[in-house]
Structures are given as structure tokens and as C-alpha cells.
Image 1: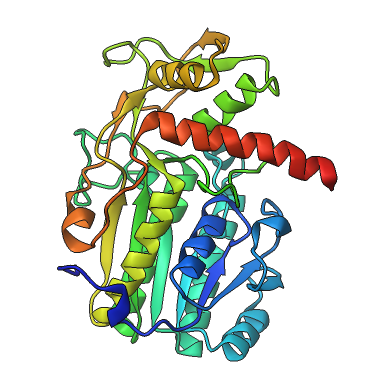
Image 2: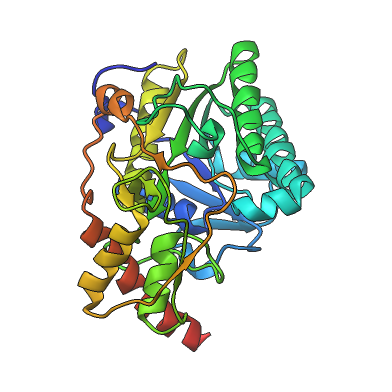
Length: 344
């Protein structure tokens, strides 16, 4: 694992290809890279992404990462020196119903992308992983060394990709960073991008939609968890803080090309479902209807990150680690999204 604080000025900022860069987290990573002075290109098939999420001046390729010839052309045209990989499918319940879609989109296509990186001599690879690889951990907070026992195809598809990266880095001149996200929320503070996918299942997205009248309420799945108020507790991280972590991880990979690293990405504290809904009520000054329903299979009582490793290894200082701020940014984007989609 990398150690110390890597200065942004100390690394050569070569061209970065962001897969899924028109999607939620990918578009924020594009902004973080661009804001920090990195040359950026995006590949996205626009199945769940939006062309408007890619900023002006960023090379855009409408295509799929399963297309090896296209990847080779992009690497040649852009002189790609690093990949940030966000392309994939992310809905846990859907992965249970359609596991082969997830093993194709998340595992099979990642294998194609890694192979293309090796063939094209791309030396650095940042991978969008997930806390779902831990399954239902026996301890909380969760460290990077906690046993990974996924309980759904989504988590397993991501874990298999981590294994592929580790094996490839041992066999070829490539290093990688696997960033395991906890619950990503919020939107760009400047209103440039945010979570735009219709029918999203993320709690804060759902709650702000309800606050704006786009839904008639919010379902609370389970009130009998072993938590202070009986609802599930999760670690929510602002998407812009997460995007910044990707840029810093890339700098660390470039500074130490013989090392790879794995980081939990969260704030190390949790909020219950009811606490999140209370925050939305505060920010919007209205009361969201809560529908109390049975818990879903496989939902852990609490899932909180131990983030000491990333805090020690990278000069990562979260800027938006406040629940009301996260909600306010998500709400502002939801209002802006209504305007954007209304113009299309």
C-alpha cells in the first residue's frame, strides 16, 4: 500500500480514460480530474449515462468497453496512461434476478478492459469497487481486511474483478487501486452534474425526489434492526469527496508504480434511514411520508467503513462530510435535473 502524502505537482498528469464517465460517479470523477488539470476522455454507452453529464472539451466516445478495437483506438488517439473504470451495472436486486447480466457487464467486460490495458501498455488502473463485496460483515466498522463474502451477484461480480486485477498486476507491468464505496450520495456543489438515472434506488436520491413531489413517499425497509432507532445504519459519502479520492489514488499509483492499493471510501460514521429522512425534512422544510415495510433479505443492521487506511495513505481530507450538506446538494441537483430534462 502506498504511504505518505503525494503532492499533485509531483506526478506527470498523463491522459486518463474514464469508463462510464457519463454516469453518476464517473461524471464527478471527470470533473475532479478536469479541475485538477488532467487530460480526460470518456467512453460510455449511454444506457444509464447522459451525454449532458460530460463537460465541454472532454473527448467523448459513444461505445462499449466490450469493444476491444474501440478501446485500442482510444488508447492510440488519446495516448492513455491511466484508466478509471466506472462502467457497469449497480442495482443489487436486479443482480439477483438477472445475474448473468452482472457477470457480463461487471466481470466479463472488466476482463476485456484489463486485457486491452495490458495490450495497450496502459500502466495504471483505478477500479470502482463496493462495500457489497463484504456481504454481511461480522464486525462494524469494516476494514479492508474484513472477509469478503458477497451475498448477491452484484457484490460477487465486483469481487471477481478485484481478483482479476490483483492477478494481472502480478503478471504484467500494471498497478491498480480498488476503491470500495459505501453509500454514495449528493451532487456536484457547483451543480454541474448529479445522479440523473430514473428509478434510482439510493435512499437520498429517492427521498429528495419525494420531497419535490416526484414520488408519493419513501419506503423504510425494516424497523427491527439492532440499531438505536431500529432502521438500518449506513455510511454516506459525498460523491465529490469520493471523486477526489480517485484522483489522489491515481497520483499514488503513478508515484509508486510497483504498488497497488485497496481503500474503503466512507466517512467512518453512519446514519439510520430515519435520520436521513429527518435530514431531508430539515433541508426541505417539509415532511416526507414514510411507509414502514418489512426488511429486505440480506440487509445488514449496520455497514460503516473503517477509513483509516485511505486517510493515512493519501492526503484525502473530506470537504462535505455533513449529512445536511449532502442532502442539500442532492436536492439542488434534483431541481436542476427537472429543468435540464424539460429542455430536451
